[in-house]
Image (tube, rainbow, N blue to C red; front, side):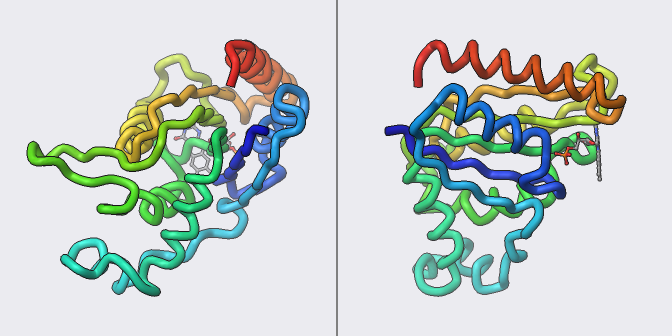
Length: 197
Ligand SMILES: Cc1cc2nc3c(=O)[nH]c(=O)nc-3n(C[C@H](O)[C@H](O)[C@H](O)COP(=O)(O)O)c2cc1C
């Protein structure tokens, strides 16, 4: 049975088009999946504490209460074999809600380590991942895209390399544009999933 983790980083939470699409995708194309849903756009993760920052940047400080939330989020991530990240573009990049999740999950000596060449090496298993990206602009090179390279690099840092991006563009251009974007994204997901999970 597929274990899916569905994360929303939209201020619209579970009402976001990306999230609703992800739910439809799972019920249509991955029936029987056990799904855990989290809305970190509507209910933001807490900011990093000084104790957490110290735990990550000093030797011997990598356990205890300071990393409890981080541990919970990583364990939840490790438990899934299908990860779906639903996110808007905010000012050319990830929203703050998603950056907060990254800062809790990408933890030295837990989800990644550093080798003798000072390269970061992921410690988590790879897993099929879809990043559903909603934007006001269409993806026609009108503006920089820092989200795609950032999410590619950050997921690879923890070991997740099987990542596919699905873009829902022109989402501020009226109902027809939204409908077109959602249908196209659903088609892309169907084609992707036809290659198997
Ligand atoms: C603070 C903020 C910044 C945004 N910045 C961008 C941007 O840089 N590029 C873009 O195409 N759309 C931008 N948008 C538009 C959103 O990406 C777009 O409305 C998206 O569909 C929202 O998705 P959601 O409903 O899941 O939150 C921005 C929206 C907000 C609220």
